[in-house]
Image 1 (cartoon, rainbow, N blue to C red):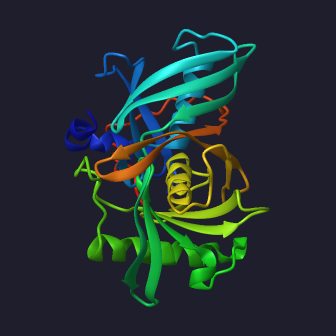
Image 2: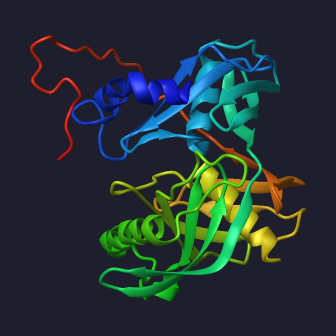
Length: 297
């Protein structure tokens, strides 16, 4: 359904995500009838750059809406929802109190470190080392100190500009390919990481094509980071990763089990976070609107 949407109705995504209805950092989810026999709902994840294979914070938002708008059968204290996504069946557990979603834990797709200690030649900078990990999307993980940029809000523009250059260079020189799904073969996310309060608390500046920061801690990015840390021996199965976003929000990452993807050792991660319904809107398109798909500045 994702492929059909991209080929036939992608103008609808642009209409919703682009200005004036959206903005450069807008993301969304389109609910559909599932194709998986066990799923409650199907989801296509959309943003300005296109249709994502998976979106962690989008899933947390979707689950919150499904519970609080009674679009699934709600049980307290936990409501389990099965979502049919482009990367497979995703199981979501929603902690519910008085009809409200208190928090959401999603069991994400198998996540893995594809390659460590990679090097790419970046225009205007030179050679940069990174690890490539997968958590539903591919992520180039780069320590902020290794590129000489302090993790400070005033350096946001530097992170963003360099992140876009890094992703361009990777996709030209060393494009990642999922070992079991060759259609997933691009890196649009560069995760600049910085230490937090301890070895299990990390901060990130997530630079995303075509040019914006993730406001959330990034669910699939947290999964990729967790897989990288586990593969490198930096976290144990019984420990919790606290992954902090650019604006200070936090997702909790845990290792549920181990598995394999192709010939690569992988983990099945769980991500816990929370979303809030901000409002409801009705968008319209006038037949005389000169920008029927919105616009990008």
